[in-house]
Length: 618
Image 1 (cartoon, rainbow, N blue to C red):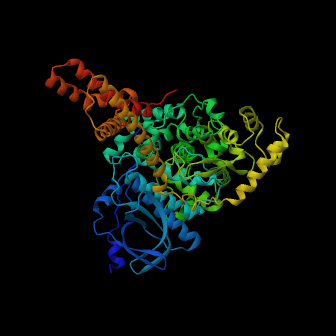
Image 2: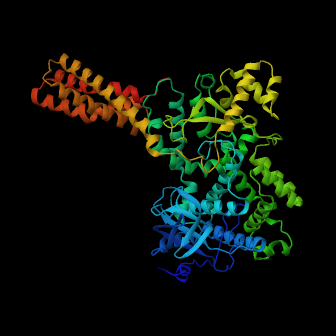
């Protein structure tokens, strides 16, 4: 077995650090730094006492070089100071930052492992997929490693996310609950700083100005919005390929939409979706699309429950000159193992945040703001400035979270489950509700939902009885939803249970196969009818069916992949690939132009059923 001394040989030596920003508030500062430790590990495939057995990675140079620069350096130094702080406060053993390169998709903060023979039962580590690109993409290792290390930091300081009330899998725009949004938003703001850092890899820095990629994502989101609003889009390209494109789009939104604080604003939802018997499309638009600069602000509680807004708050917090430059006495910094004259302004911001987090153990960003003001009253004006900008002036909600579970409305398990292959009962906080949450309750019309939002917040559900038009029967329904909520488990550990890729993809595949079969049959019939007009009916049923399948499949791919107007893309693709070559062949053999045109028309006709299936109609 590899000894622990060998593992320590993988320590990264960090001698300089630069802060992001150029002329922006985060000025580049170069200082000599003591050595920081990042231990890179791999999984042996063994377990002991229920914990994975990990060992030193035998080829860590590439990932180490990537994380030695940019904001990764800042995150490692912050982690080291936090470890020193916890040792002073609790007598814990200082640990290196650990990175496991594994075969697990995504990135995770994890706790507890064996390092060869040494048990580290409660020690945190970051788990990243070994094939994740090191830099140059949104969501690359040089951004996700700081993100996941931030989770480890926060959990060590305040504990894991509380049970909250949402049972939805998180995403940057999804309204979950204040506890989960606090943890995810804090971690996600590290991704923004990683891209903006002046010493980041050049291809990572270039992401900030990649206008082509931004335009592509915005075009996709707009096309998705149009499909969602359409009255007919059974095989809409963006809805049916959602699992293939949204993950990359979300990573881009974690940077651009967070910096612009667009998730603090309402994405427009047409009233006809809100008045639908099943307002699922309204829910999707509300939890997927960022707003625009001119859209109205969300309510404060909804902002505090949306990780994209919380991330925007922390970015602004770290950039605020007053919070960066206001320093305490050396006695404040001693537990972190530093003095005020050797830390950068960015480090100063985080050390004060860490102290407030540790002292108050906040479960939401609202509780952190209150704790920080109490610990550092002289900085209240700076805090107010940051909060005002991030929350668009919306006042705090001085009311409890009143979580309800609506058994009459289900959502998919994560946004990727667009077709609700794994449905979940929708839960929401009455004091953080949206119009969609309320109109999904049977008996709540749109006007009444607006009144409920206007008259809030509420100390308890019974206060709804004082609203005009709120019947005793409807009040009983809301009370029953409170009882239903008590039966649901919504802890953060169980939030992602049931998130099976196979379960999510099954309805996509089923819909595709059923409609492809139907379109192929109709396409074969159209192909035969048009060939009959040309007196060319010599094809067998098998050949006709094969032609219908070929035309439908190509029309599907053309409508999905070429963009623009799917109807024209679908028909044009089949005409160019099948119809035109067949027509030219017939023309060459028979010299009959009319026959060639009928052959071309037959192929286009075979594609028509699928072309209408992939084209949103309003």
